[in-house]
Length: 249
Image (cartoon, rainbow, N blue to C red; front, top):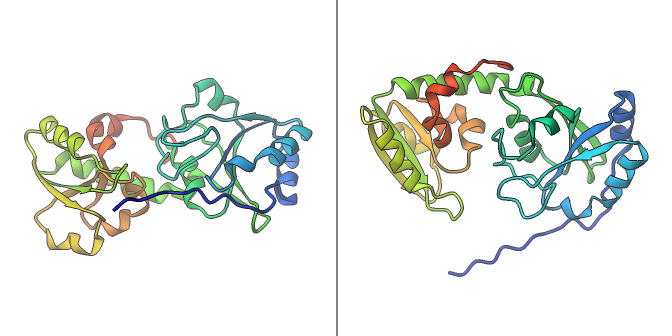
């Protein structure tokens, strides 16, 4: 079956609401990291003009797996996904997300885990014309749970690797490399089109799970994995990550 994916851009007005403008003024913001979801990323002209009128400098980038600069995907949640330099990260006072929902802006929060001074993410919803604020403190419980899963992986004897056949998310070969990296562990590979969380408890011999699909599964769905779950990239670097300073957990 042939599949065609089409973008569906928002056709309404995309601009900063009064709450967002007041917040930027109140906090004397001069540099923002600007990102938007695909529905709004090509309609940021008015937003950019408003920021210019407020004498605010825009800092942005071309994130992983995105089509255009300033676009953000929910899976761009790694500290290197945004391709921002250390200098740019330091200059940014807060991240400004243009779009609705929480899934995409949470990627900007996750991408700052481990940072000494994580920045707020303010979300300007052009549909509801409202402002919400997110911060690393909002995901502290999840980060602590994820660290526990990393510790489980390090000591685990049997590991279940979850592999999806969805285009863009299939990472079977990298998963095989993980088996070579940890010869003292027994690996079982589970392949499906989707991850069926309700079926995981049927395999009670698994000590911990490794997710190779969307990296947000490893974070957002922690509570669905009784045995714990880590993402493939973090499993590769598990020991180093455990030894890293816990700046914002």
